[in-house]
Image 1: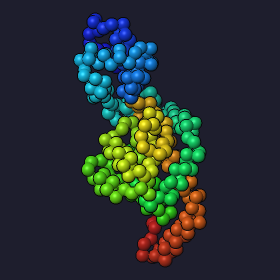
Image 2 (image 1 turned 180 degrees about the horizontal axis):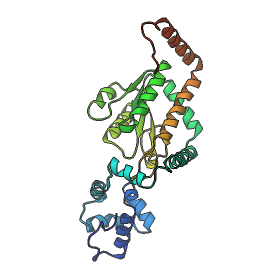
Image 3 (image 1 turned 180 degrees about the vertical axis):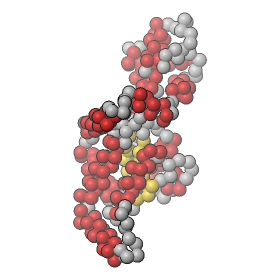
Image 4 (image 1 turned 90 degrees about the horizontal axis):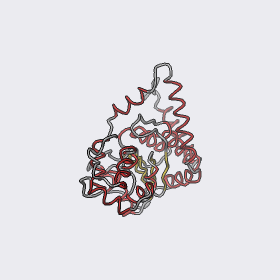
Length: 280
């Protein structure tokens, strides 16, 4: 984001360095603390703190809010950027290469022990609440569909607004909340995490932002690589992680799961004439 600062004539050398960094890496800067910016640029936190007032803002939070308003990309812009880098003949290969890259990056940062612990927490929970807003809704529905077949109690939470509170009002200590948090921290996610900290139940987060994995009440957090900010985001890796969770839970409760699936098979046979499955 070039020329973010219209007039730099009065800037000190340190302020010029900060301004240059922000113009070069605006999206990265949005998620950095003042201390991290100072460390990155080899300056003091006091210098960084004074910079915001020098450019007309009360503090870093106010500057970031304005920057976010001007830098947020619409889904159309993200898709256009991705498509512009491909042509029809290269699309299948490009997408496969990107998927492999995302899977490799995700695999490096996924601890099998954490995956097993997450499966144990969910398998032993009174109820699993799933927060899957926006494009992650399909993942939440898949998880709910599969785990309900295992005999587990799963509740999909409202994606936005005060209806979310209808689920949170019933949250208990022996419940587990699974949260999908992609791209940015939604106010709804913040509310859920606040409730989790008060109820003191377990929470599991699946996110494409590594910085979201720290400093929250979530007991376990998993990073999934989905693509750079400002580009079309793939759902390949979160889907794989969800399927790994489903299979891990199934392996933990193998006998119970097989019995439930057997019962389902018997019901299908009993009512095949009245409720045919069709070709789907």
